[in-house]
Length: 317
Image (cartoon, rainbow, N blue to C red; front, side):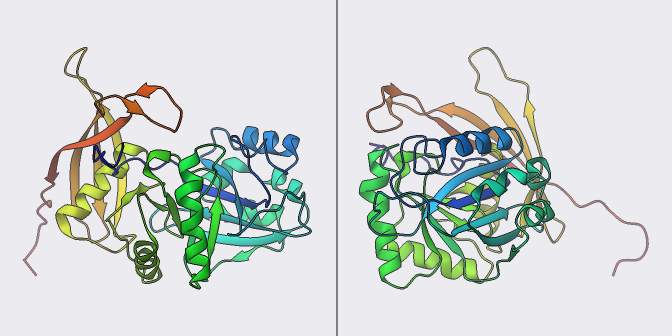
């Protein structure tokens, strides 16, 4: 129904400045951190530790059939900070996932890679190919299994290294959904050829805007604003644009939608002010398989204005 209604996809990514991704094979339940073969006490503790920190914790597993077994001897762990110009990805393996509770989550959320390294001394910078995380948690939404798992399997079978399945990226109705690191852009309604192009461009430090939901570093109005400026200017460098300010604007009345003004800055010095409205999508439709009819939020860009550069004293160059 989301496809038929052509529901806008820009500005629908989850907001997470930092990602913490822990390998956990086997089946996942609806709330994977506490309903998988991961110790549920550890899962709850990780949820509590990450709350309000800007860190999003998710489970990952390699594509393929998932036997119903417990703890693997060694697990892959990734941490990634997605702020433009300050992004990084760290990689580690551990046989003691409880070590993640030693992380200073407040520091990690602010981009402190040392918080990850202190808890996992074997951590190293990840400088490999871009990582592709495909949501496949069918227990949370069956679309993610029916559409996401075949996509992850096709990517892995065709030799796309760095492909993982992930528990939850939000926006099930946009399945198959995808998160790409190191830059943290999320995508929806993608197929294997589109993902390969996205990863090829990511390897060059560029972003593909088709099927793009937004960069997780920013709240949803900021995501929509940045993508609108990319559409206006044709900017493709992943770190060319940053949302340096996002503020709410006074509503025009009780029935008026919430408004935001985002200031989007280019690395070269140009700036734009973008006004974004939060509207309810209609007609009513389920936001997830089996859910009641609802009105999902959509981000509509109302205005883009480029700021004039301030005049400088002295002779013109």
